[in-house]
Length: 342
Image (cartoon, rainbow, N blue to C red; front, side):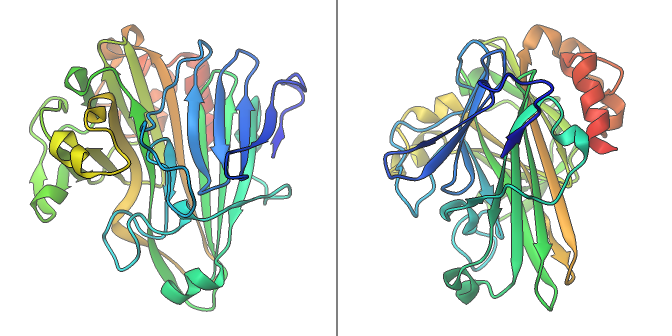
């Protein structure tokens, strides 16, 4: 774990606490009052608050906070399987394991720590995992909170085995929203998607933007690296930027399925939307010694800054949003994104 001493007051960056099960949690803070809470159970971010103290991630009131089950909410790591597309447990085992902190993680680009508080976590396979997935790997996760309140993830998977292996990956991201009927998702127009409610049949998105009137469970393919969730009632927009993650999974259980889940309130589907950066359709294959990196960055900005600047011609890459104020992300954030890719 660490922080940039040139930016942070030493009192503001990091606090280590324990949860009710005695598992470590790391609280990241920035000088303006924003915070993120990371649990070593699953490497899961269970809270992300802006400088007004408003919670930006959804967590169910019925969530079960007990190992080995992952908490329903926040942002969790799905590895080496996303969903039920394989022989392993739902969403893989990474989110159910206890991670360790890593003080001497292999270096990243200096821009990945400049002006940020961060924590480096590591997961290696134990005997239990090798029985069901017999591969040697190192999964590293850096979670960082920037001075502007943006929350970022860098995941690195290295093959330390003597033979190739393949995996899928995703950041299961529960966004907190005012009302699912008042939300729209922009950036996935005209894309093909696999509908998990129709045996993964392939369709093409027809609408100008996604709105929600019933259960949804879709995998959007070859997606742009920047999309946005507009919450009209709260006048807030979540800007989601990603790299190395070609797919976007969109999920909301709606009323019927909500009532069938023990760790989810009957009406809570109205206050959440999962929008996951993922690599699902085409598994990632690593040869011995190879490493894969997947990045995700979340920003929460006033909606008045965003919709007027959306340009479909720019949404295909990070480089297209360096100068313009696409989604209202100011020039400083855009410059950070540009550096993020160098």
